[in-house]
Amino acid sequence: MAMNRRDFGKAFSAAMGATLVPSVVTPDALRAVTLPQHALRPDGKAIQLDSNENPYGPSPAACAAITGSEPVACRYPDISDEHMVAKLSSFYQLPPRQILIGCGSTEILRCADMAFLGAGKGAIAAEPTFETVLGYARVMQANPIKVAQTADHRHDLKAMAAAANDAKDAAGLVYVCNPNNPTGTIVSMAELDAFMKAVPATVPVLVDEAYFDFVTDPGYGTVYPWIARYPNLIVARTFSKVYGMAGMRLGYALGSAENIGAMRTYKLGMNGNVAVLQAAMASFGDDAHVADQRRKMIATREWLYAELKKDGREYIPSHGNFVMINLKSDVSPTIAAFRERGILVGRKFPSMDNWLRITIGKPEEMQAFVSGLRKIVPA
Ligand SMILES: Cc1ncc(COP(=O)(O)O)c(C=O)c1O
Image (cartoon, rainbow, N blue to C red; front, side, top):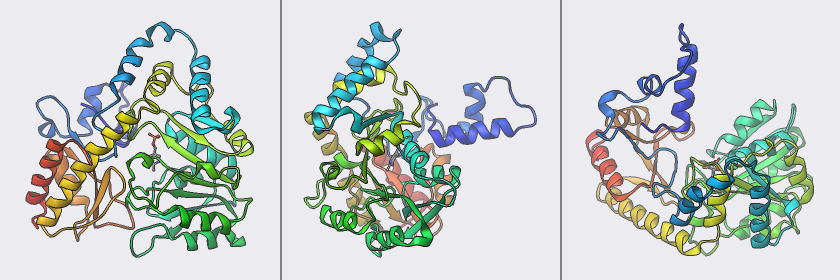
């Protein structure tokens, strides 16, 4: 069965922690420590609504490019990498030295932590948010500084700017996730502009726009055009969400030549494989495909909202392909009960114990989720 990265991590640690470490961790061994057999559907798959993936997968053009990449599969990816950067460079009107390709945007976040953090430095982020930046910050022996969200579940940018100016916090990096994972809320361009003015110019600010393509709010926008004005600004993007390529691993950063240069030092050499780069080049800027993915996702999200409303359940209106639902009691048993039914949901976010994050899947997957929810947590 397909397994997400957290399950793989857990399975791997479980296998490694066992008294007898198998010489080869077989797929069967991994399956045994993840989903119970009865949770598997006849096709061996679980319904995966726990990692904000796009269930529709890569565009037809991307799939054709993957198949067509066979002739270059024997070559190192330097040339494909150059072509990808050239494509991004012409789209964003930024020179190649201001662009960094990553093995997913995860590598971008890690490179930022490695470049800007270290012992005694502070990594400032909202609570809750996507944890990767704070996770690698700990690896760098930096101090994670979590700034509580506002009452309407948004980044408290004023408090984050205050932390960035507080000498005792020794800010090395500020992370703004917009839209925010897991709350799905956004901060507007006007709010971000005021924030950039308030943060010291010496402190890098990484704005993670992983879910950019799903937002329709007129007050929202990408901030990469501000890089010349605010050289401390770095923008991260990914092919994992609207482009449906989470398993293929490609993301990138846009920033000043100085900051991107500092981050580049820490990237893995030849970090993008040729099939992925070909697929990304084929789908990047395919506006019709992006619009189609957004339309499908929004229609399914609206359907979910209507079902939640019928049940009188509280949820946070989302700008991403995921929604937080208030279950009014700890979500852990509910996540486990869904898992028994072969539906992966969650995970639990520490400061929002009672809120279940659910990824917007295909309509039939969401129907299975809603009927499961009605049985597990009756309204
Ligand atoms: C806000 C955010 N940033 C980055 C990532 C990492 O994505 P990837 O490494 O697949 O590009 C995720 C994944 O869920 C995310 O939610």
